Image 1 (cartoon, rainbow, N blue to C red):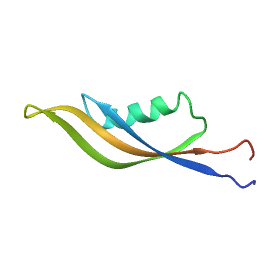
Image 2: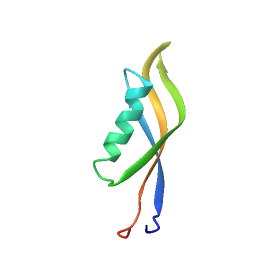
Image 3: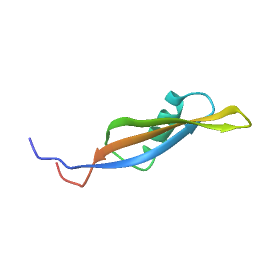
Length: 71
């Protein structure tokens, strides 16, 4: 088994429906340009509020992916 290196990036996804969809949006959007996604960790959840109403759910996500060409 070879050694592997992973890089971690932090993303913020948003949705007008739920935190789950916000996290999913972040991961799926990142997956369009990053390969070998491994683990996503939800770091923080928050809401965007306008005129006293929730207008967006936001999820801060730490996402790891395999880094480099080897292994």
